[in-house]
Length: 289
View (tube, helix red, strand yellow):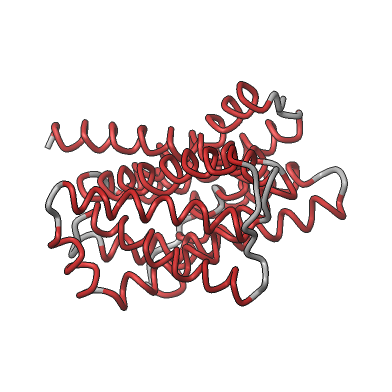
């Protein structure tokens, strides 16, 4: 039990490091291509990584597991794909730091889904956590309302779809190997996003070579390692504790953004972000009791 706890903490912290770094590569890639093309590059590289890993390590059973559960994996991934498109579009409008703080609202929507659809109890402490998180959103969005409001709504929409995907992934991870589930997520996401990019006319094919480098690094951190580590954490660790650890991601993104992009967080970002994280941490810890 102690070993599982330590492994769960290690997986969750490592996954948060990857999730925290990924938005920086998203921002760098978006300097050269549009949102749809960026998502195609990320998911294409991620799918390639998983396919190569499955072949090299003789994990053909993972392909069979994915195909055998294609409806479940496909449904989960559909929510993830929409969330990813909204999230990366929000980064292009609002920057990586604001985006990662606002996407923490995923936990709020997850709690509300539990109350609405699974008849879970809703405590006063959870209500207080949601109020604090909502206040954080208003503080974060205070400023240029035309841009801030649009970016905020887009990123809250992303959080809503991510919460739907996370709820499904927790149920499916019990029946599938976490690596197979992460690989299936990448493969199906590539299909969905590529179809969207082609039919919307948004797929770009001419871009600098460095775009591929940023795309590969973003795929490895944001789609491959982050999801594998996150699913591994869910496999051996309580979802509420995993969610609590993940509240460090926006602060990691702020650090990486400053170190790599020279973006210094504003007072609004820090104060609003801290309020959102406090609210989300309260929700996660309350759910543990």
